Length: 429
Image (cartoon, rainbow, N blue to C red):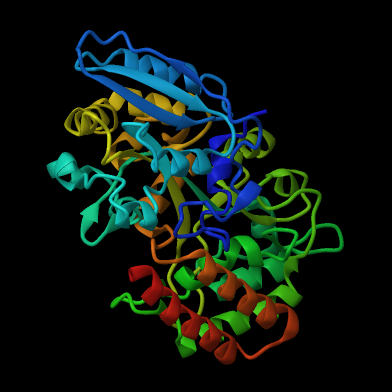
């Protein structure tokens, strides 16, 4: 069975997000793990130029028919869509090493740094041109390297904090904007029957790892791109605060993990960190008795933040018709706004990559959906291309030691900093 596209983003803000798109995440990416067979369809385009376009297997019903319909409407080339069940990232990586490359292919948060440095994908900065201003800067930043844009965003998913209005009101607390607010609210609403805050059956370490960095006011990578960007006393203090909160206020286990809305819907917790994708189920359960907010500002330099991920369209550098491929990608993901709204709104709940289109997506027109779209523009963060799997592992170990073993945050982050300098030097080569 195919997995919904939302699961690609299930770890977009957590410790498994890597510089390789999602290549180091294994089954946790939510990518299908079934057969790697593929299906294709030919475009009805009448032009003599032939292009191939690749997608991974989406889980929502209707997506495959939709993308083939979009391609068939293009009259400047004959576009063949290949639908790829299986381990999509591995299929793409292998294909890019052969002569049989896809002309246009989607990838999570744009191409990997390895693809860019190996010259496997084309710079799309000029292809976007003035249309760059139509996309949220935070979304484009995730696919920008060396001041060049390497992909065109297709659609966006994100995570946020859900809360029960009536439970917070009864406890006399407000929706949290700061971490201190979150601690106060969680402890005020928790009882023997309901938890205060839930972010996963690992206590939140997995999904919130990168959120701690962003919400504390830092970035994964330093401005000069030579090391990590959060080796700072304010970060040490922020992690100490989370450790204290995790011992009193954080629900440590629930019937489902953080990416499933069941703990919140079943009233196991008054607040839950989860994804946009559970919004329809939450609305069905509680009508308007819930709200959403970004992750609260954490520590003395903190700011509100949300993580997001965007499937994006890339163009192969070794395709037979690179200019035609760039023109098609621009036609579909820049010019064809009705199709962009359809892609985001008709098959699950997702945010169009252009903020101006969000009001046209009916599920985002008002209420929590509209708030979610605004959060991405105002507070959104995506993993840095230099945030490698090795850095992910080092940071994971540090967080685990701090939260579970009471290790000194300064010493643990110093280890990550040392690893970061060596790793970034290696990657930049």
